[in-house]
Image (cartoon, rainbow, N blue to C red; front, side, top):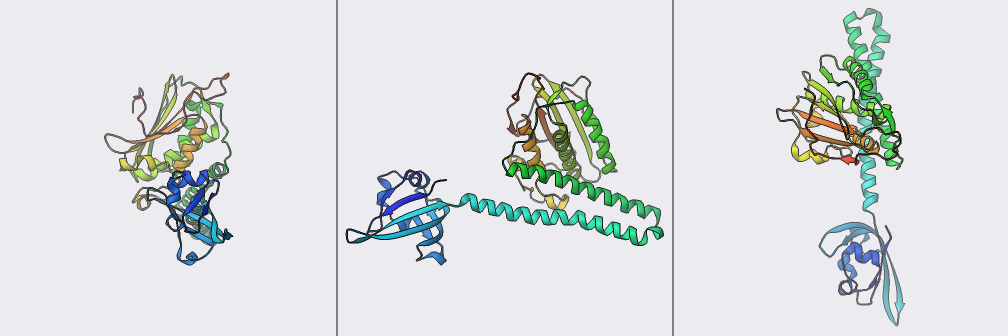
Amino acid sequence: MKPLTGSVEPNGRIGYANGQALQSLGYGAQAIGRVSLDELLVRVPDSATADVGVGQAHRSDGTTFPVDFAISTFESQGALASIAVLTDITARIEANNLRDTFIGILSHELRTPVTAIYGGSQVLLARGERIDPEMTRELVSDIAAEAERLHRLIENLLVLARVERGEDLVGGEPVLLQRVLPLIVERERTLWLGIEISVTVPSGLPTVRGHDGYVAQVIRNLLSNAVKYGGPDAHVQIVAEGAEDGVTIRVLDDGPGFDPAAGDQLFDLYYRAPGSALRAPGAGIGLFVCQRIVSALGGTIWARQRPAGGAEFGFRLPIYEADDDEPRVASGASTAEPGEMAAAV
C-alpha cells in the first residue's frame, strides 16, 4: 500500500492529503482540511512527542488502524509547517502474529510425535529382549502412528509453505477416484485400529481433474479429522458419487459435530473450534490445506452438520476433459449443501 502523505498547516490542521490518505482515512479533500493531525494520529506513549514512531490512525468513522509515522517540520512564510507520512502496518502486524502462532503450534505439534518416537525407540533398544511381546507390539504401533502423524504434518506444512510463497499448486491430471479411494482407506484402517471405516464407491465413476498425491492428501486429512473428532468408537463413512458436473466425496462421522456458527471458520488457517484441543490434537492446518488444494484443482469443499448427529466434510472435483485447460467448477470453500446423494450411506 502507498504511504499516506499530507501537509500540516501552522495551526495543526491538514492542508493537503494525497489520494491514498483520503481513501484510507475516509475523508473528502475538503473535509480533511477541518481535521488536525493530532485528531488523525494518536501516538503510542513512547512516541508521544517524537517525529518518528508508531501510532494509531483514526478514520472518519471512528475506527483505527496501526501505522508507522514520520513527521518533517520546516519553516514556511515565517511559520512552522510539517509534512506527515503514515504507513499502514496492519499486514505486517498480522504477518508477525501468524509467524508467532506458527512457531508456537509447530514447536508443540513436532515435539509430541518426536518425543513419543524417541522414547519408544529408546525403550526397545535398551530393553527389547526383556519386554513382553504384547508390550513390544504396542510400542511399535505407537511409534508407527506417531511417525505417520509427523509425516502428515510435514506434508501439510509443505503445501502451506507453497501457499504462503504464492506458488500455484499443480493440477489438471486425470484421476480415477475408484482406484485411489480404496487404497487410501485400506492404509488408513491399519493406522486407526478399532475404528470402523466404510467406503462406498459406485462403478463407472467419471475421471476427475486433479492430482493423485494432492487428492489423496485431502482424503487423508478429512478422514483423520473425522476419526479424531469421532472418538474411540467412531464409525466413519466415505461415499463417492458421480454427476454431470463432477465427482463428490463425502466423509461422514457420527461424532459430536461442530457449532454451526463456526462453519465459515473451519477452513481458516490455525482455527481450532472451542474445546477441540481437549478432544483431539491438531495444529489447525489440515482443513486449510484441504481448501487450498481443492480450490487449486478447480473444485469446491464444504462442511455441514448431519441431521442425525456428526459432521460431513465433502468436496467435489470437476470432470476431466482432455481438451479443456480450465476447470469446469468454480473454486472456493463453501458451507452450501451440495445436491442429494444417490449412493446409500
